[in-house]
Image 1: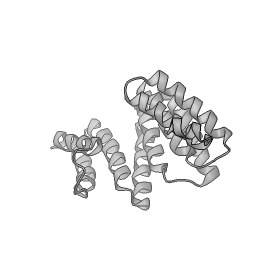
Image 2: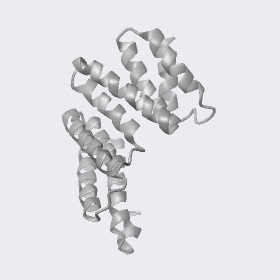
Image 3: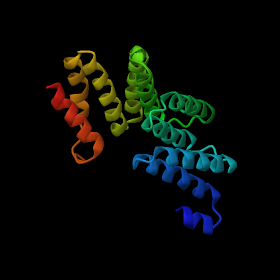
Length: 187
């Protein structure tokens, strides 16, 4: 996509693809290189003056920071993403932003558990309202894991089991495998 959009002089798509390729690098174990590429892509994207997808792209950058243990930086990027949601009204990725903020807060300090729980609950509610089951599952896994760590295993299972039970396919995906493993652990 980068090559084609550069050839065709499509800076919007080139910048978008640069961010995605940076995210892919972080997922492949090269977070520093991936973060640098995502920053470059975001700068190019901003230069196109497009406001679309900014929260999504910032969420990917925040994940990159989380992957390399830079949770404070991830939290700052997530706050920027929430600001972008406020400006644009584009909230299709808001559930994942809430979940990621909760994950960052917990990684910074276990004392942030109440605030993280609020983020996870809000992420679940947003995903339900938008009828996005995959993001609801991710948020439910995060909250169930928090509750398990707090000794609330029955509550965790009661939350996660019905969300997992909604799915009828895709059981080989990472999110459903993760949910199933957590349910087994909660048994």
